[in-house]
Every structure is written in C-alpha cells, then in structure tokens.
Length: 390
Image (cartoon, rainbow, N blue to C red; front, top):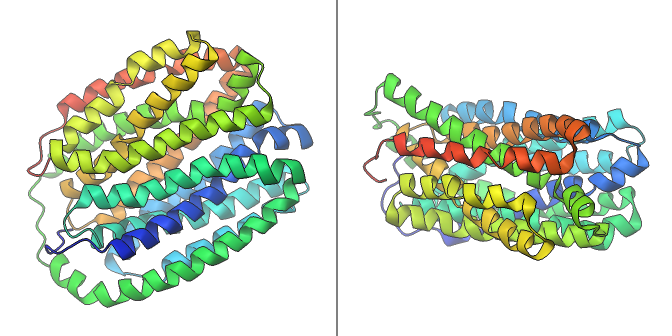
C-alpha cells in the first residue's frame, strides 16, 4: 500500500510499539518458564517443543487469514479483541493443572497474537509517512524488547512465586487493550483515505516473478527462524549443560541475547531505508554464518559476546523483509504482514518441535552444532531482485 507523503505519526507508532512490547512480554513469559514447567509437569524436551509448536502454529496459521480478511474489511478494534484473547489465555495458563490445559492456554494466547500482529503492522505502515523501514523497526522493536524483558520478570517474579503468579500479568493485557482502543479510534478515521489509495494500486510484477521472490524469501525465513528457535527455546538448557550455570544466571544470558535482538530490530529498518533492503537482508543472514559455526566451541564469555552479535545481525533482517514483501505485492499489506509474521511464528514453532526431538537424541550441544549451518542459506538473498525503493 502506498502511503501519501506526510510526517510519520510517532504517537501512533509509539502506541503500537508499546502494545507490541506488552504483548510479546506476556508471551515470552511462557518460554522463560520452560525449566519450571519441565520440573513441575515432568516434561520431555519433545513436550516442551510441542508447547512452543502449539503456540506458534495457532498464531501462524491464522495470521495470513486475518490479514487477508482485513485488507478487504478493515476492523479498527480487532487489535483490542486480540489482546482480550491473550488476557484469557494467561489466566488459563496460570491455573493449568495438566499438560492438556497448558496446550489449550497457549493456543488461546497464540490466537490473540494472530489477530494482533498483522493489524498492528498495517497500522505502523499507515503511520509511517513513507518511512516504511523506520516504522516497521519502531513497531517490531517493541516486541523484541518485550521478549527480552520477559525472562527477567520470570526470574524476578514468576520463578520465585510459581506458575500462578502469571495471573498478575493479565493486568498488562488489560492496559494494552486500553491503548489499542485508542489506536482503533485513529485507525477508524483513516479508513476512507485508505480505500481511495487502495483503489488506485496496480501490481507491476507478474505472478511468476512474485512466486520466485516469495520462494527465496521463504528459504531465508526458514534459515533465520529455525536457527533462532534453537536459541530462543533452548539457550537456557545449553548454558546450564555447557557451563554449569544456575537457572537464574541462564535467564540473564537469555536477556542479553534478546536485548541484542531488540537493538538489531531498531536499526534494521532505517538502515534498509538507506542502503537498500536486499543488502541488509543478505548481510544480516549470510553474515551470521561464521559466528554461528564458532559458537559451540567457545567459552562462556566469548559465547555471550557472539550470541549478542548473532542476535543483533539476524534481527536487522526482518523489518527489511516485511517491507520488501509489502512493496513486492502492493495493496496487500495485511495479508503480507500476516504471512510473514505467521511464518516467523510457524517456522519458529516447527523448529522448536523438531529441535526438541533432536535434543532428546543427540543432546542440546549437538543441536547447536547442527543448526550452525542454517545461516549459510542466507546466500540465496543474492538472487532477490532490486526493487525500485530497495
């Protein structure tokens, strides 16, 4: 979707970024609690992977459908409805008494995420004033920051007080709902102008060209998010096994990694606006390969430094990839946003499940040695065409 030239609405961008922060903070609590859940419910690594898979698939499968529907039928208050799902999912998760209820709870939270992400990405583009990479970075960094803070709150609040303390975080979902109602009011006033712009959009690319580029982007997404799944879901286990760290220390190291991801997201969009999105995608994914290959053989200090570099570089690719795809298929902002955010969740979930099964057989360290090869697929970014604004 082409946005008329105007100044970015930083008030709205700030609102969706804060909401993204709160949304992903709540979701990251679930991941941070894996060691606790494994102990209390006597779970295998494969069962832990299934929790992630359930959450990611409910989010990923619905997101493109939500985006496709709202491209044709805008729903300004759908963001608040999605946050309500997260609210109820957290309550259920806090009081789950068996593994099945845990899975149902994370599925509800995943449904909330599937509604939130494509629509909030659309709002970010609407408020961009033409600075699309910057807007996506502002929006996405909220989520990355929330994911980084989640493990700290888990270490400080949830781990000492147990599973039921998650219920207190449902108040965060309520705060986010209030913010998103305000965003919905702004969104509603933009519907008429958006319809006028959308009616004039013509896609200059053939279906064959679009299909080819989407296949390349899918390969890059697979590389990025499968590798990230090995870190997001299993870093604490890797650190405790490799360096005999305590659980709380491992939580801090997960925070360091996620904080570097947030920094990479902040800079990835604006850099892509300046040097071109194809270049930032290539550098961010393929450039990680040497660091990933070295990681399993280093000491704790060097591993921490390398993980920060890896997180920073990989995260800088995603804002550029989303905007690149939005410009490849103009007029389908919701569908494209839903597809790419959905793929990020789905691939991450499938990765967590597959890697969990592998970890049960070859160990966490073996998994890290194997997944280190994935960033080499970033080489395929060379074959992306240079779009006019890229």
